[in-house]
Length: 111
Image (cartoon, rainbow, N blue to C red; front, side, top):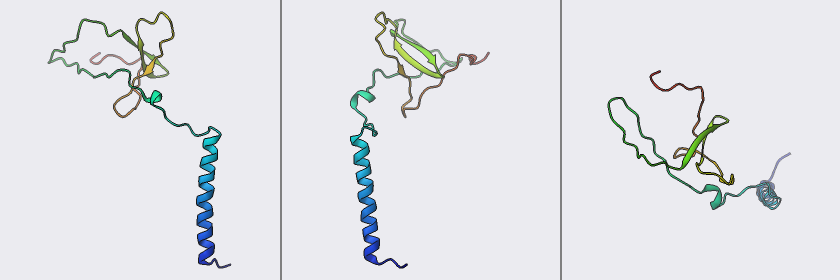
């Protein structure tokens, strides 16, 4: 069987239309999740202070009112004074949105 140029064009147009209809139907049924501004809010920025035996690092004596904890191998941060229990914890990520891993079994450097 030999396809004509018209048959090839119809097949290409049909494929594009089928793809577009599929995407529209998936979106209408709620299977495609759209990112909102609320999903990507930055609550606080953090920086890493290098701890070296040759230099001194000055840290403020004031509390940051945040606490970090380890859940499923990832470092989460939440407000320290959370009497209501409604404050949501956030996962700590680097500048490329990669999660910071943590371990309770990891020894301190130099031990």
